[in-house]
Length: 228
Image 1 (cartoon, rainbow, N blue to C red):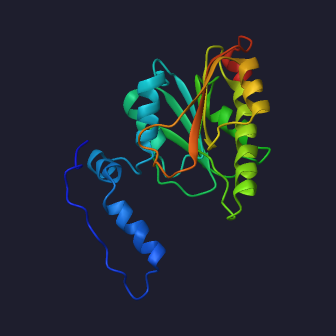
Image 2 (tube, one colour):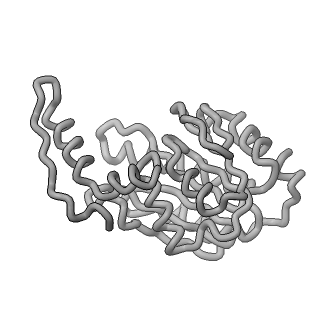
């Protein structure tokens, strides 16, 4: 990987900087994916997680409409724009996101009852891909954090099942251990293949994995159905 040969940089602990923040800054400065993201114009190193998942699963091949749940800061949508420049993309996040050319962005809670309708109206038809990098704010209690994030995954999956085109794909971040058995069973009922993956750019110490469900079995939908 480019930049891998650069000598390791150390950060001195400033008076107003905690030891934890110093370690984080040092890790960022020495992370080859952070350097590569800057060099290639991506907003975050997370972009390479989608790049690597696409290389393995062909997520972006031929996509025409894409929904990006938890879009901030926008790296995943940037990847879609580069790999599938003709695709329509809509994204949503509680956090503000700087504009991305060709992407419609909503600053709102995906759990809001009005969110799915706004996304589909803006997209103008059934998506080929629903991708979610959403994660709940952590509270420091591993079991609670896992449950909160899985609730988001369940909601994202329900949305995907409701709106995807037949043959479509759902990809979502999950915690270590992957999606729970009930959620996997629901995916297997609705998709041809369901697999878990940890892309190389996901830090070794991170608890995140991704679940990739491909070959949606849903009924044939018209664009009018999806936009209604």
